[in-house]
Image (cartoon, rainbow, N blue to C red):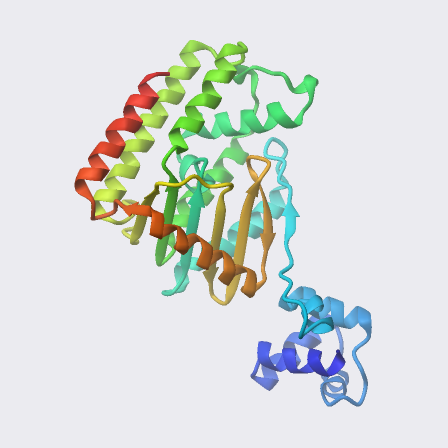
Length: 313
C-alpha cells in the first residue's frame, strides 16, 4: 500500500520540486523530512497519508484494493439555502470562477428538473425552489406561504453569481427531460391547491417561466450563451431521467454532482467518477434531439408546447 501510495503521488504531481513543496505545505514539514519519505527511508504515517489524500483527491480505497475495486468517493453536500454558510459558498465560487481561465473547461448536465445553473437567473423561480425545499425539509413548523418566505438578499446574490459564472465554461452541454416543465407546473399547482401560493404569485412565476423559455430558445437558436458567447449544445431527451447529473472539469479539477433533496448534491472530486458520469450524460444524446443551431422544426414545436403547458397555470 505504501509503495502504491508513493507511485500515486508521482503520477499525481510528476514534477519533483512541485511535489516536494506541495507535501511540505500540506504536512507543515521540512523538505528534508519529505525527501526521506519519498525515498522510502521513513514511511508516511497513516495520518499523513490521509491528509495528503484529502488534499490531492487520492482514493485510499483504490490504494488498498487496486486490483479488485474501482470505488469513486462521493460526499453528500448539504447546503441550507435559507441559512447559507457564506464562507463555504465563497470558497466554492472562487473555484468555479477560475473555469474561465481554462480554454478546455467543460460543463455537462442532464436534468429532469430545472437546473440551478439556469433557474437562478430568475427571481421568482429561485424563490419557488427554495420555498419547495423549505416546505419539505422543515416539518409542519415549516408550513409557511410563498409570500412569507424570507431569503436574505446576499444569499440571492450568491446564487445569481453562480448562474453567471457557469456561463464562462469553454463548452457546455445540457440534456433535458422532455417533461421538465410538466413536472414543474405540477409542483406549482400542488402548492396553489394547498393555499401556499396565491394566484398573483403564480402569475409572477409564470412570467419568469415564459422569460426563461425565451432565454433558452435564444440560446438554442444561436448555439451560445448571450452573456458570454460561449458555445452551448442543448438536447431534449425522449426518455425520462431518474435524477439530475452534472459534471464539470477545469484546471485539472473534476467535479461530479448527483442532485438530491431538490437543491443539494452528492458530490465527488474523483476523476474516474467524473469520466463515468460524463460518459453517461453523453450517452443520453442517443435518445435526444439537438435543438441548438439545429432541428428548427422540432425546436419551434417544443417551445410552443412548453408555453402552452405554462399558460395552464
